[in-house]
Length: 99
Image (tube, rainbow, N blue to C red):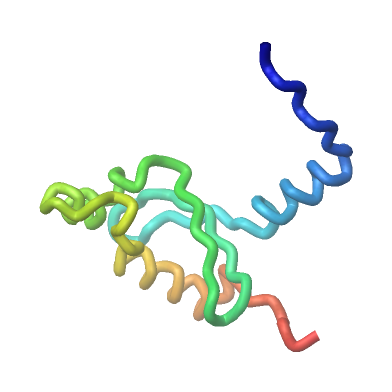
């Protein structure tokens, strides 16, 4: 017998989707073309969601092939440079957190 799922109001589900997916912008890596979804939450915090396997990134794939555990690989420096370029060019923005 499976346990019944708790009722989740539609507004809660919508809030959850907005929190997890709202503001994400598609961005291809300028080096390899792998597409990710990116959102700046503050000047210090960047949310990156991969739309494919992280192993599709040649930089990350090489580190995994060298024996680094996939869960411990930090983001690709080339992807980070792409995100920083997108910020400088106004493609991505940082929300005003000062209220």
